[in-house]
Length: 312
Image (tube, rainbow, N blue to C red; front, side, top):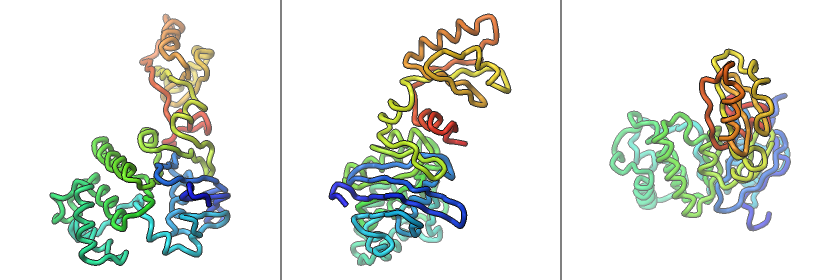
């Protein structure tokens, strides 16, 4: 592997019986970047992450992490990783700091090292004042920050985050994003999965879009939007059970039209001009309930590539 590549996958495949969860994907992760897997539930993101974490064997293809083969060097790889799974898996009978102590001992750290490292991580996760509290009554955001703090106990070179903010409220998500930004500035390489397009845009330097076990696009968020969408999108909502009824009225406005169950999307480089055209074209007929102009997002990229939204 090239020294500027931390992780390399070629033809990476994972099957469970007759079901193919990951179907021959290729990707590379470079030191110090935040790399993301974007896609809906069932796209193969978590199965890929478990192989990268060296806890699930590769069915076929080649995977190298730090230049090592996880089939042979699993313990050596895991010693240099931090892993934050979807499920928190905290010991709720222990205190916040005791969860860190126990986990640190798994890595062979001395008691003095564990306590010093725990102090640093509690401060990083903004949990110092809760260090003696039991885990069970903590909020979801606090538990998630504790899981990330625990995954950093061994000073990992690479941190894996599987759906890090699922189930959190917007404020807790932004606090967690800030912690991850700080880690990246410290030189920790991040690999994360998400089905939130705003999270991928905020956190990822590069990402791959996955659907049905395959990679359908790769690049920076800005590159993907520029390549697969327009600068703006006009969302038009009608008082109708079937928005397809209004397709013909809006056809030809903008670069592309997508009909969703609850709205019609018009892709355009000048959203205001298209919104004005919508008003003129529907005047005196079936006027829309609302017309909204917004910038394109990664969800528009996914819709264009797969014909489905990220929440399908």
